[in-house]
Structure formats: C-alpha cells, structure tokens
Amino acid sequence: MKTPPCDDAADEIPVLEFKNVSFSWPGGKGLSGVSFAVPAGQFVLISGPSGSGKSTLLRLAVRLEEPTQGEIFIHGESFKSIYPPELRTRISFVQQTPTVLPGTVRENLLMPFNLEIRKGSSIPGDDELYDWLGRLALDDVALDSEAAELSVGQRQRLCLIRSLLPKPVVICFDEPTSALDIESREKVEQIAEELAAEGVCILMVNHTNYHPACPHMLLTVSGGSVEVLL
Ligand code: ADP
Ligand code: MG
Image (cartoon, rainbow, N blue to C red; front, side, top):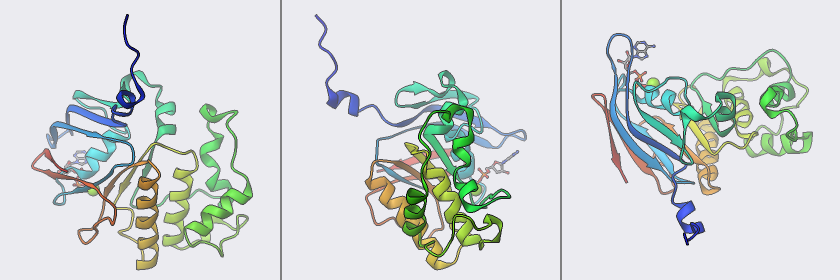
C-alpha cells in the first residue's frame, strides 16, 4: 500500500519554481538556463546592472512573457496548465509607474473584483479598505475621492493595496519605489517585508541601497544568466 504524502512533503513544494527557463527578445537579448525555487514566505531581492534582464525575469514570473525553453511552476503546477486569468489571481505585479483608472479610490481598489474569474468571491467592504489605507499611511484619503487627484506616492500605495486585496501568493515588485519620496518608499518596503512574514513570496527589484530587514534570498542577473545566493 502506498503511504499518503505527509504534510511536510506537501510543504516542500515550492510556491514558485523556474526550471531551466530561457527567453529571447526580438534582437537576441534575454535570459538563459534560469533555475530557482521560492518557498512560501521567501523574500527574493533581485539585483543586477541596468539592461541585464531583471524586468524580463519578473515579466516571465507573472506570465507577461512565455519562456522559449523550460517551464515555470506555481505550487508544482505548470503555468501552461493554468487558465491565465486564474494565474493572475495568484500572482500580482507592482510596477514602477502606478496605473490608476478614472474613478474613485474605492472603484480603483475594487477593480480586480470586476473580473469574471472572481464572480462570487467576497468583495472587501469599506472597513477593510480603510484598514489597508491606514496600514499604508493613507489615513487621510477618502474612498470617494478621485484616484487621479492623488500624488504619485499615494497612487503607488493605492496600486499596492489593489494588488494585495485578492490575496495573491506571489507578488512581483519592479522598482516600486524609484519614483517615490522617502516616506512612501519606506512604507512600500515595510509592507513587502510584512507580507513575506505572513507567507507571501516577494520578488523585488529595488534600488541598490535597499536591504530587506527580513531574511532573504538574492538573485543576481548578469549577462543573461541568473545566480542564486541564499
Ligand atoms: P533591466 O530590467 O535589468 O534593466 P530588462 O529586462 O528591461 O533589463 O532588459 C534586458 C534586455 O532586454 C535589454 O538589453 C533590453 O534592451 C532588452 N529588452 C527589454 N525589453 C525588450 C523588448 N520589448 N523588445 C526587445 N528587447 C527588449
Ligand atoms: Mg527593469
């Protein structure tokens, strides 16, 4: 008789795994033979010179690009076998430039819940939204105010809340703080570290002076390859 897998074995399946992934942009630049595994709650700091492929790596991790070779897995399931809108509920992408749409702060925050895939899932109420605004030092922002009237730093934090509300298991940050004042920058970094402590995998490209206060794994991208330093 086969022994059923114990919980410990199940826990060992990485949340995100790249297996021998290569990718080429038209023009030939890209990444080759990238392999790494990220367990739950791991903070991954990605560094490397400009143009080395850091954003490319994140775009592969959120399936905005497809590997030309190799495969990427989430909880042991190949990206290829997951319906893309379903994958997007599990992995969020916070980019350098925050994108807010015309409408109120509340409408912007609840945008992910308009998707067909989330029909029937519970929609966060105003109390939960105000809790998040407070957690990101946006206490003075009203849910009924126009999102476009917020400062860049406030918009970036709004976009961060919007990507967190659907409770993704992986969040990829591509230089999320480069356009921000120090206070907004520190808030975004602090929340990312808190999320890792809560079990979310964080992949972050950030400015060179940033060193997470929490334990972290380093990925260095250079010359099309990726080196993992634990
Ligand atoms: P980084 O984020 O480390 O600065 P990128 O991942 O943005 O680097 O880019 C890596 C390389 O891929 C660069 O040489 C860049 O010119 C090239 N590249 C990025 N995006 C594209 C694209 N859309 N088409 C063609 N080449 C691209
Ligand atoms: Mg980049």
